[in-house]
Image (cartoon, rainbow, N blue to C red; front, side, top):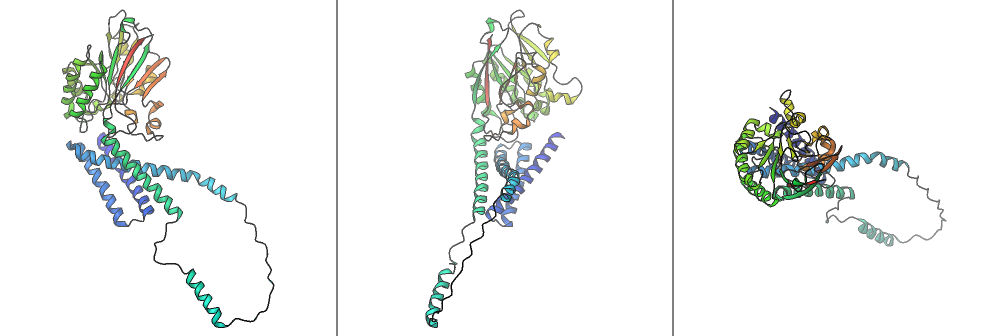
Length: 426
């Protein structure tokens, strides 16, 4: 039901944006109704292809459809921003026009009459014919566009080119532009024995239609380069289809030997969409320790480190007691050990701050699609926790940009990452 409602909303937004963009293009370039109908037909075909690709696992079809629709959204959003700026400037334009000084009247000119003999009729007619010939417009060359029309064409064309180019780059190159982010974090009270202990974080892999064997190989190679002591998977490991749970289990078995202390995981909201029991079952069968309001000790109980994991905040919708419970996780480890918390959604950080030294999260994808100053994630996401390192009440939060994609298989200004968190004793 939830997925169906989501697709209905997305479809309505795409149709509305296509009508808006089509109208702007039509006005700027004078296209006829046939071109407008063709554009709407292409958009509806792309929407149908997007849904079919998701339902049937048709990766090439989905990549083409999503790239086209993302180009539509970016182009429309840029033009909408221009229109909003123009709308906001209207009061200032009106005030400027009212403030203009009235034109100064021209001085009076007097003429003196002088009587001269009239020229012959033939001598007057010839200059008149020449003047009429010189002032007549030449109908052969096409009329040049006015300044307003030219600016409209330039703005509309630039928006369409930027939207299309950005979408193509994000789909072909951006989502595979993997990086390893190294993040040293001081942990107060951390034993010298654990100084330099390395947690390699993978988040938001989204195994599904657009994340498969090629991405598994890339992730495995990145984890190998990061040289982890322990690997932590912070949720949204499967996109939405339980068919891909087997792929997750296979991936977990491949990366487990790369870390001397094995793999720990927590669930994310998409793991609930796909089927939480299936996802957890695949992980535990592969030897992964799944922490759901639970904890374990790295090292020993005297001078070790508490690694905690809580349930995803979305699980609260499934009933009382189904969401994250940090207190329950803390009771599973010695109370005096420094704590590192795994929680999929960074929105939980205000609840955890002051109780843990570090929280590792994902969920946001770093915004996934960012165009310079246009970063919707910073506006939409609570507290502005989008990507990188944050601090609150003496605790640190690291928000991983994720490895895969959700929605359009593209990334712009938010490269996929594997995080190498190096714990440093204070």
